[in-house]
Image (cartoon, rainbow, N blue to C red):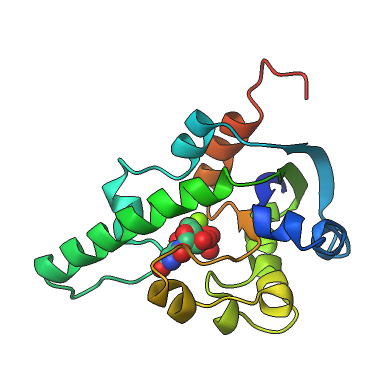
Length: 174
Ligand code: UDP
Ligand code: MG
C-alpha cells in the first residue's frame, strides 16, 4: 500500500552538508519525495512535535522496553526524558532543518529502517545514522543533552499522520 511518512533532517544534518546524502538514501530505496521545504522551525510546531505532555511517549523515549520496571525507575526515566526533550526542542530550533513527506509502499517502516537506531553508535552500517552519525547516548548523557542523530522519521502510521498534519497542514499550499 502506498503510504506517507514524515522525515526531518535535523540541524546537525544540514550543518554537516549531508542533505544530499540523506535524501539519496531514501530515494535509492524507492521512496519518493512528495513534499520538501527547508525552514527554521517555530516553537509551537516543535513543542507539538516533541510532546512534553505525553507521559507515555516520554517513558518510552529511545524505544526503551519498560516491562518489569518499578514505579521508581519509570519515574526516573520520565524525569530524564523531560530534560532530553526540552534540549531536543532547543536543538531543533537552533538551525535550519528540512521537512519532507516521503511516499511509497511501507514508507513508514522503510524510512525507519533506512534511518537506523536512535543511538548512532548502535546503528548498523548501511543506515543513515550508522554511516554518518558521530554521536552516542553515552556521549550525550555525559554532556546532559539530546543525542545528535541527523534525522527524524515517524515511528508509526499514527505518528506519521499526526506529524504530516503538523508540518504540512492541509490548508497550506506547500
Ligand atoms: N533522545 C535522546 N536520548 C534518549 C532518547 C532519545 O537524545 O535517551 C532523542 C534523540 O534525538 C531521538 C529523539 O530524542 O531522535 C526522539 O526519541 P525517539 O525515542 O522518538 O527516537 P527516534 O524515533 O528519533 O529514533
Ligand atoms: Mg521517534
